Length: 390
Image (tube, rainbow, N blue to C red; front, side, top):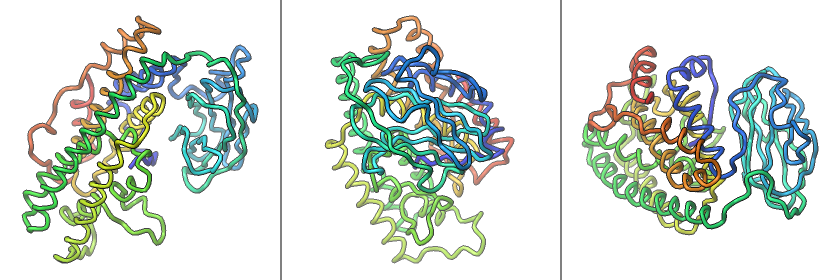
C-alpha cells in the first residue's frame, strides 16, 4: 500500500539509493509530460512559477494553511510547486469534484522543501488539499480548470500514449494473473501448517503485487484489503491481507503474540485469495493513463528511497529486498512503455535516462531463500546499496 511515513531513519537511508531514485523520478515525471522535475529544491525556489505560465502554480503549505497562487487554471499540463513552510511533513492532493477520487498527489514534503506535482488536467471542478502530518482530510479548497484549446507544454502524442497505456494494462493483467496463482500456492502451504514453505513463498508471490504497486490506487478498496500495514490501521479498522499473515509467520518481534488458530488462518487466507481473484477480474476494466503510470512510478520510487528502505513494509519478515527489486522492475516497465514518447520529444534526455536507468543487479531476491528476521540497520543500508545502486 502506498503510504509514506518520513522518519529520521528514512532520511538517513535515502542516501545509498539516491542516484537511482533521482534519475528514475525525473524520468517518470518527464515521460508523458516532458515537464520539469525538481528534487527537493530549497524553500523560496521559484521553480515552475517563472515566466508567468498560467499552468505553473505555487502552493504555500504550512501546518495551518494551504495557499495556492491561483484557484483556477486552463486545462493541459499543470504544475503545482508545493513549498512546505510548516514544521510537519506534508503532502498535496488534487481530488476530483467529489473530494474522493485522487487525480494526483505529491507526498513526503519535509519542512523547508519544495516539490512539484505535474499532471495533465481536463476541464472541470476539483478540490485541492494540503495534509500537514500526512494525516486526515487535510486543508481543502475548491479549484477549477477552464477549457482550453492549448495542451500546455508537453502536449500528448495520442498514438504513442495509447500504445503505452495498452502495453502497461497488459503488463498489469499478466502480473495479477501470476499473483493469483502464487497466492494460491502460498495459502495452500499456510493452511496446511507448512510454515517454512509458506515463508519461502511469501516474498516471491508478493513480487507480483509490488511490480504493479505503481497503480495500486486504481484498485480502490482492494489496496488496503490486500496490503495494509498494521502501523497504518485506523481506529476500528479490520486488518486483513498479506501483512496480517506475515505477522503470524514471523511473530518474533511481536510482544505476547497469540498465534492464529487453524480456523482464523483459514478465514484470513481465504479472504486473501478471494480479494486477489477480484483484483484479477477487475484489472481488464481499469483505465491506466500515461500520466498516472508515470506519477505512480515516481511516487513508489520515492517511497522506496524514504520509507521502505527503513524496513517499514516487511516489518515482521525482513523480506524488503524482494519488494525493492519488484518496485524498480515495475518502474522500468513503465519507462520502457513510455520511452518512445520521450524519444520523440527529447532524444538526448531519453538516451541519458536509458543509460542511467539500466536494470539494477539481481540480488538475493532471486535466490529463493528468505532472509533472516530483520537485520541490523547498518546491514539493511549495506544491502540496499549493493542491490539498488546501478
